[in-house]
Image (tube, rainbow, N blue to C red; front, side, top):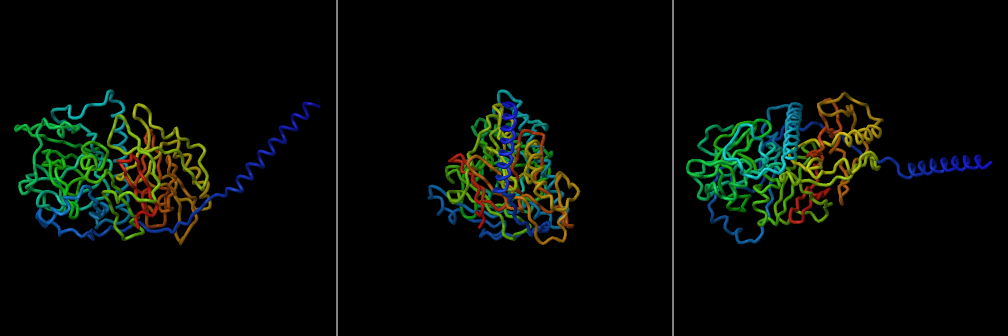
Length: 488
């Protein structure tokens, strides 16, 4: 009799738990949002709306001195996507090239991190006295996806410069050229700048380079090699940079006389990483160690993307998460990702341990403006993808496309309901618009889930998922913020 009572009790408990779970499911319905299917963006037209002097015009110092008395500065810049230099290409070809660049960049980042993790103890900067073509600099990962226009030298010569949060060294092509790639503006001539100054070999700035050398006059030389085989080499120097009408003096930059690879169009690169030689690190006191950007969806808006330096860069309504530090690698912006929700429910198989950075510097999560597609460590991606597929089971599936394994045929649709997606950072739950994770990949109505898995322990939050947010880098407060309507 006691055994029967025990079985009855267990059965009753099971029924209760089942009813409790069903009740929870009813009270927490699957969440959807509306996606209005757009098209692949056509090649953007390279036009500039900033109130800058005309291209290559010279502005004397007296016209800029009024801003130099300020203790801190604020600057807003217009950003454009690199596709603007490929106006003859079709939208499909541009997207294909973007994914090719993206894969190359991601693999370079993974390679760089694995080499840094394997190095024990970390290599001291500037330890090499010469150069090797096999060096992959810890100061650069790629050429970035967005560019702006700024003045170099005194008087300033306005040039197109790529901005990249995954690189540190600032550099421009300089004459005389041993080998220079094609750029939109005339090559910068340092002999025509009154503020150009070479850096001696014994200088702390020269020793801060990951790969440095000396010429016969004991002046510092730099080299930065990129994962795609591109390279820039030349004199390491200090120069004045002008942002609209704000002048910032004595910025350490590479003056490249031998530049080879895929940097077509721009004159150089403005490194925005966390390393000692990046622009934010060098000029932090002038801008209170704050900058932010807003990357607009090019398929839905003709408004240009933007970047802000200074206190105005930090939105009041932002959701902030602490910055983490990798002891082996100082370039990247690491954050703590705790989990992911799909359809309003946390994906149970995605635990914080999947995104944890180890004591050896391996793993973790970085925010990167130059990577397009967010890559999650494979176990986390599969769990997220499966949850999304389940919620989107009403949509017609389409074949895989490139690195995307979850695609849908939305041809003929004017709007569809798709599961919501939320990224849970420590202290910041970031809900993504549908256009930030379901993107067109061709002109036939195929849309793909814009995440990918990686065998690496490192996850990367890419710029497709950052679209429409003002992403704020508050280095003084050691935090990153996301403002959902910060582009207005």
